[in-house]
Amino acid sequence: MKRIVRNPDVLWREEDDAMEEAARLLEQGEDAAEIGTAILFADGTMVTLNLLGTEIWKRCEGRSEEEIIAELLDEFDVELDILKNDVSAFLDELAGKRYISYV
Amino acid sequence: MSEPVLKAPITINWALNNSCNFSCRHCYSRVDNGDELDGATLKECLTRCAKAGVMAVNFGGGEPLLRSDILEIARHAADAGFRVSMNSNGYLIDPRKAAELKAAGFAKIGISIDSHIPEVHDKFRGVAGSHIKALAALDNLSNTGIKTSISTVICTFNFDTIDDLILMAKAHGASQLNFHNFKCSGLGMANKDELDLAPEQWKNFYREAMQRKVATKDLDISLDDPIIASLGMRDETAMVKGSVCGKLSLNIKSNGDITPCGFIPAVIGNIVKDDLKEVWRNSQVLDKLRNKTPQGKCASCSDYADCLGGCSARALAMTGDFNNPDPHCWVE
Image 1 (cartoon, chains in turn orange, green):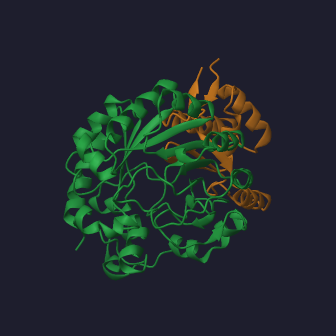
Image 2 (cartoon, chains in turn red, brown; image 1 turned 30 degrees about the vertical axis):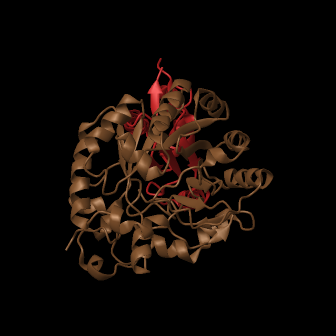
Image 3 (tube, one colour; image 1 turned 135 degrees about the vertical axis):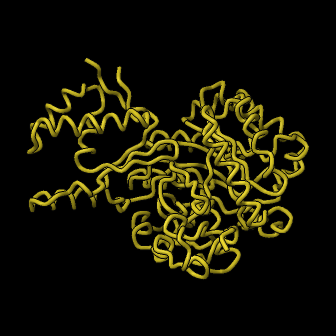
């Protein structure tokens, strides 16, 4: 099973105000997918992540894709197939930008 | 997805000193005074910036290697969690200094080189032998594993030497070649008639540079000028529209004064006395830079949404208002 590792050159942080706003929307049953809650920064490029992306990124350190999906399934109210597709697409994008790799 | 309202700058460009062993004819910092923060104060400020969420610090000057405590300061910054980089003229980076810089935690160092022709570079920088030492610095740093870049300020004597500059960068292992637009600040203003290009020349330069950027796979060619948006060839790696100053980064002068960028002289706080996040969030100057009002030809320009008036520093320097069109803009 391939494990995901972050590119050590990628800097990242969560954005406190945006995290609070996303949490508030979710509590009210609203969509928070458009709220950027974290940023990744490497060599002059920047990527903004929403809450799900942030949670995936936080787990991209030694876990496999399957393990990440299993963890998120416990945490988020989402169907497995949808989650699988979202996680897979997101990891593909990060790998394409060389923000992660598989070992 | 919406861009987050960043809680703090991503990176800070931090002038550690104003002293310099060179006398470059476009230097922006010769007009600054010589006040410098002492090492202990600097370290305390760096710690506070790291806690505020700043992720990267890029030291500059003056020539930062003239500070005797540069290694100690860099080590402190790296230990605080920063990605530490520096801009230098390279004159003092022999193999031993390169190893010391690596040990101090530098991840990347940019060397300023203005021409592939030694005599041209040396004359511009005012120091004989500076070109060969700058190239040696690139080699010495690469040998230690520190990533290197070349910073070239585009002006009248180098705008038509893109291919030569690329070859030079590749030959010395640089990972990035930064083509900086000419700023009319400090000595750059005094010498602009001799050094700055006409708008049409900028247009032609950027067309060619963007073509080389696309075609060059083993070297990152960076163009930091938002006015290229009007060529329909916008740099896809650009992180924000318009200038990054005050949106992703801030500048700190050697005396601790905070400015939106090194080329905008508006002091919006002081890193010793003021809370960085407070300045970042509440500065009226930053608010105006982040929400510019198009003036003149910008008001009817279809590219304004992407370029946001171009370089705010240049517009401010040349017209007194950063909302005015970038004087380099070629759009009629």
